[in-house]
Length: 527
Image 1 (spheres, rainbow, N blue to C red):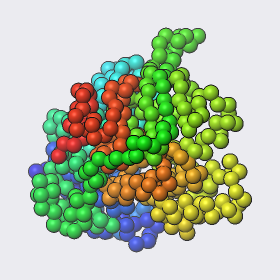
Image 2: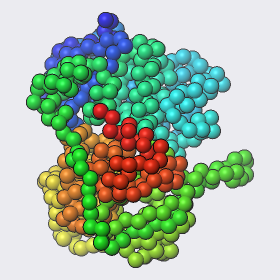
Image 3: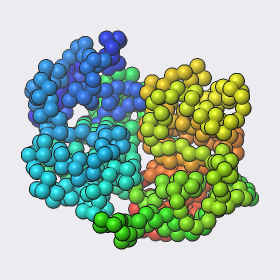
Image 4: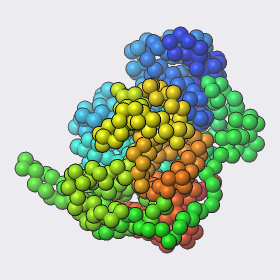
């Protein structure tokens, strides 16, 4: 087999300190999928980004080894040579699509730019190809959405656009860093099938970085396992999952959420009731921006949540899950009625709403994007206390310390910045920020999607412990049905802004009524 990439005895260091990656040797052959797995901080992304030297030099340096791309040294290549390889010979799907897409440019312009740079295709000739690729990755009404900006797409849709951008030039090697993290299970399956199909057509090599071992098992030919910057095991996918040799690999494979349904107090009082909730966004056209139609993001849905329970909202990207959560906090305009703890939320005035919001908190999908990089951890967690003038400064400091202890973070780290922490630690900081307000109700928008399985398991245990200790109520938005099964009692299934099925998790998972729900469950629990 022809090796597209050869990594030879590579060590990577930051600021000339001790290496964070130690003497790694790997090869990726044409037409092969190599999966690189390990916990956050194990060195997966640092190693993969070094293949195109995408890390700033300095602070990054390479104390030993080399990287060969089709036999040519990457570490000795000129900047012009690297620019030619990037996007043309090697495509990259980054983990955080919102930080990778330019918020000031339309989707057509961003995809067209890569075609112009690498294929010399002017805008008028690239549109057909752009539409074709957006359709391939599952963007609905692709032709009508060419002039939309990144913020107008859901998290999963943004990830699909990134995948189209990486593959549109048909590269020899695709580096996919958690490419399906933000995607629901059905679209995840479509994207994995698409990658497999293109791999066969183009004889493309794939370096697949993931914490989801279910996906790795389906996709990878070989698996390389990293722990604390060292390569501890490399084996064919079949052998590694059947007979893992290294203790660390065994730990990764054996960590799964609890495989049993949750049950809460059926006699508990109802905390939140939603009736006929609608969120419609106008579609405007022409010079005078006349409304010619509506995007029905949430279209007349009703449900309720009992105190101390957890309700899951599941469905494909763009089905209205996150829009629903924002409407409940009145972060966006909506119609319908929702009652929280005896208060009709959509009839409250601004000062009344501020008081109620202390009891309603939000943990966002992207912990890095939702934490200000300019604020210390103590300032992030304590911001709500300061805004609501809760306690004196000394008392607030103690509340911050208590909240950090609650989420099992060392309070000594509160004077550091978000970029100094791993994904799991940042998610705990986001949880502490919500808990410090002592809320009754927390909306969790994909809180574990960006975390590896071991950290995900820890956060799930923490959420269940907090729910029991503080009698918390959760609205849990997720595409990971294994996580939903481990945490939630009730589930609402959404499609195109409507509820297509709802009930207890045990009832819906064991005997789904709708074909859409059956497909979600079948795809999620495939071995």
